[in-house]
Amino acid sequence: MKVKIERDRLLRPLAHVAGVVEKRQTLPILGNVYLEQKQDALTLVGTDLETEVLTRIDNVDGENGECTVTARKFYDICRMLPEDALINIVNEGDRTIITSGRSRFSLQSLPANDFPRLEAEQWEESIEIKQQELKSLLERTAFSMAQQDVRYYLNGSLLEVSNDMLRVVATDGHRLAKSEISMPVDVSSPKLAIIPRKAVMEMLRFLEDGEETVRLDINPNHVRVTGDAWVFVAKLIDGRFPDYEKVIPPSLSTHLEIDRDQFYDILARTAILTNEKFRGIRLVLKPGTMMVMANNPEQEEAVDEMPVDFDGQEVEIGFNVGYLMEALRALGSDKVDLGLQDPNSSCTINTPQDRSTLYLVMPMRI
Image (tube, rainbow, N blue to C red; front, side):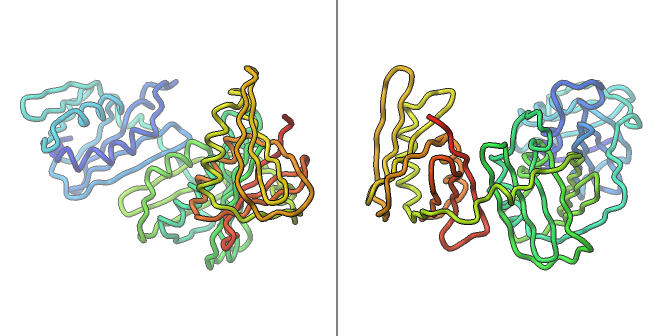
């Protein structure tokens, strides 16, 4: 295999592929990236056996062939070359030679035939969706996924497809994020797929804020997203996602429409003096005022407040301040609707005019 390509054309696709490769692997070849030059196109593939990324670069000069090289070293070499560098890649059996100008690198190469690929069976559902819409759904919910939870089905996002809606839900058991878009989808029956956390985060690196469409394919064990020059495949988590509808309160006694930036700034200031482990703050509602209070084991205290349209009985509820701040950041609107009831009830956060995205935060005892 021989390839001649400009560094700027290679670097970004290579970064996408190298990103999925784990630093520590049980199989040496899983630390490699697969390269194939065929019909004036260079294809790169990376996998960890759970997620696979394929990118294609068209109009590349070279001779047909295939090889595998260490993903991280190959990427670092290309990244450190000058921006206008021309890179030559030549495979010579168990070595791959990379040259550019006066620079020469010889990397170990493992047999391309040994490189594993994810074998996905027939796809049951296929959806066309704009990149920015899919990216927005994932961005608005991804922060609520669990990390290394023993309840493995929480370590990912639920993708729900029905005839008129595409919805993504994530929860770690202490908070929940739900976002959906209306779109005509022709499915035989509603489909549920739990996409692993790593796959969600890698997918966000590919998706852009453009009007271009991608194809979303689903079967019982895999999900695939296909763009113009890339394909992303991931194994799904085999498990039952919690019935999230049951934990969303049908109605709350108090709804406050407040300025998002002002509320966020008050939370950020108060958070400075919270307990570093539990990050608890207290919201105290009084007629016309909402106070935010915090203290820590060093007996330090913080109190801040803002005016609100409230004339009911005094209410005091504890929350994890980090959960509230992340939800506010994800909404990005000028005004937010904060739903509250009592110390034992969750609060809801959404945009007053747009109910397509909802955040739920469980209360905590302080």
